[in-house]
Image 1 (cartoon, rainbow, N blue to C red):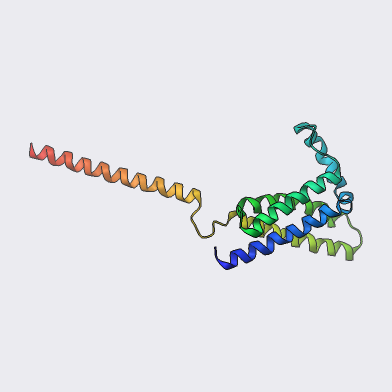
Image 2: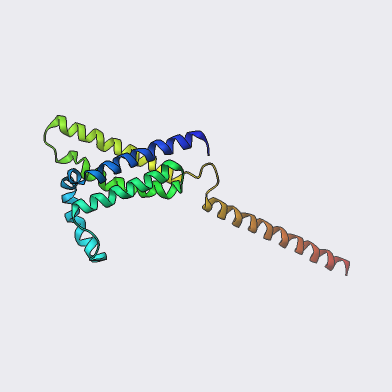
Length: 173
């Protein structure tokens, strides 16, 4: 792994470890902000499995725990692509709940929330890049397409050879 990738993953993952730990330790602050979203997703969660938590405080803690674990995985380079994808999934609701600039009337406060919302979009972009990063190796899709191309090329070559042999045999007889 190149040093730039390692440093970038550590910085990005470390941010989520710190933010997740903060939310785990003090979930009440975030639970108040999460109430509107929790109310909207509660019916969906209950329809999937009635045992799933629906109270905002628990949802905040689950999201925070996932951020700590996936952040540590990204920071240490352990399954960084899936970890980055999971973090992207946790960042979307956290951004919507944590920085609802569209609901704020005070221009200074709204602008501050807009800045944080935009910052989180930048983090989301970084996570999406990390999720797609193959560390310089060709992706599985590219390798599969290349194998198909090589097999087709080999098959065409074999067919041409067989045709040439058959043609040569016909001319000898």
